[in-house]
Length: 147
Image (cartoon, rainbow, N blue to C red; front, side, top):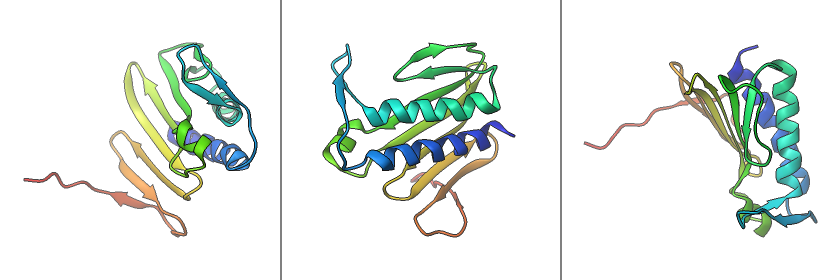
């Protein structure tokens, strides 16, 4: 399995956890930095790490809720629920942000919006792709800079 495949699988796992809590009762705590963390954040991070450890047990993590662990030459970077404030308020613009880094250089990343059924991912040297709700296949995303 390639790292980007593992990222997509981990995003699927996080999406399932986040959808389970969306607009339902869940716990909210205040972190030492004053930001909020929900039960969904914590459980999504656990689900992500379980998937990624299952495929690449030797890789390290830099995770929002649990910090840096393991080796840092090959590491997963995890924000299990970006947009926690939106999530708490019941707005669907939130979801996991995941990346894979090798020797300090990002190799792949994925952003998922589980309540909207949308996802964007990119792989170094391969391009950027997106999958919209009800789409049969992902499409390549191209950006043309204004001149």
